[in-house]
Length: 217
Image 1 (cartoon, rainbow, N blue to C red):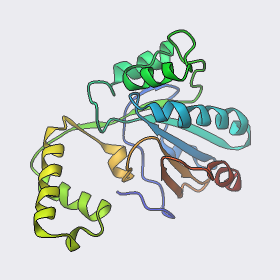
Image 2 (cartoon, rainbow, N blue to C red; image 1 turned 45 degrees about the vertical axis):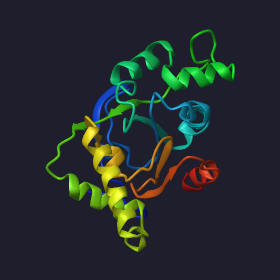
Image 3 (tube, rainbow, N blue to C red; image 1 turned 180 degrees about the horizontal axis):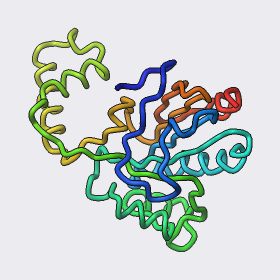
């Protein structure tokens, strides 16, 4: 079941809940849901997405909003791990490029984040990568992300497929929710209305997020 704007939001594929009670979207009928999708080795997630999600959680939870954090991993599999997510939630410690950039911006309090996450947080379910359907996976990616693919010269198409083949083949896991919602990267935001309909799926900057959210509330 793939996600489509204006249609019921598919269930989240959860590997493990690390904070809060296990929750599915069906349990949240009647509430507006914001899912903040991030990676622990993603500086932009900590500069923009997570402080914003924490702020919205506190200001609107009593008005019908539920914020969920979903950590995923589509790259840097040695850093975007359950262990490093647990380290973040239990002690406020960050790692890798996140730690480096936050230190450069003097945004750490000692070695820790100056804030904690107060909403439920889960790890995306990571399915082992198999090569059985590699070409079909490449076809799906090309169809979704490269609409002009067929207009490119044959040599360029072959080079693109070769790069994608190498990328997909080396991945140890496939992030199921990330793929189910056809996300492009992190941070991403999923906004779901009180009836369980997916109203927005945005990657990167989402300047209208609060206006869209309050409109649904």
